[in-house]
Length: 295
Ligand code: NDP
Image (cartoon, rainbow, N blue to C red):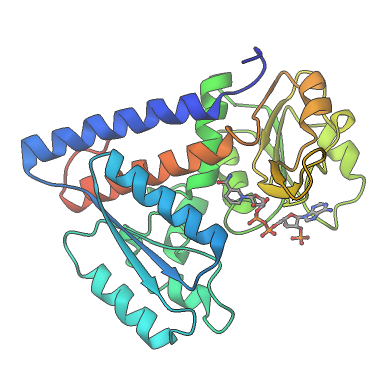
């Protein structure tokens, strides 16, 4: 790979290897196997792909994977009953409810019904509050993966100007909290931000999480900045009719010329998200058993 490309796939493989080693030790020394339950409601094809790859990665790490597929028309009561069962199951250390849920289900209600200690996505209101106040919490996987890549690349992030493009609860806001926790000067930009190009150009670290294919052009990137592209967008393939391809929220070709370092799509943030899910499950399991947490 070219020197300024941050290889998320390779970094994620290292994280997963460490998680697998630690899991094997938990088994051999304590007879404990971490377990992750994934709940999918309905048949959204993209969600089915995500759930399958999460299950496969869980098993590859030596953990138990429990998949619960509920029909799209399941009632809130049915889903809450399942969550209650999983909350009380000692073999389940992490629970992930695949979002988005069908419209008739209230995601906030469902997520807040999880035991916060098993909330490996870090979306429960208690975990959001703990993160915001700098206390030990479950940290959302995608921003955690971004932070790990940034720390690996920069060492200290202290004093750097970070711009987070996007203010969603699952990516933008927790990303900003994590960067603040590492002493960056953080700006959160969104669809109402004025002079967005100038705001982006002020960033030493630019994290794009907008869900708009290739929205950020190279001339929004300060020369030498680090660009983390969270976006996953499927667009029609320019050359192959009827085919699609994945692109990020950043125009990779022009941005890579300006950036000091940049994550590709695919192969950047995506693989780190799954690696962090496994790491969070291991952390939840260690905490549940009062054992030392993996680093
Ligand atoms: P949301 O749609 O929830 O949030 C998008 C954010 O971008 C909003 O805050 C919105 O602003 C802002 N935005 C939208 N359009 C513009 C614009 N033209 N200018 C400035 N800001 C804009 O998306 P998510 O946070 O859930 O996801 C973002 C992207 O990350 C998606 O592509 C998603 O697929 C990807 N993703 C990738 C993951 C991974 O593992 N790699 C995991 C999760 C998400 P406003 O609030 O004002 O509307």
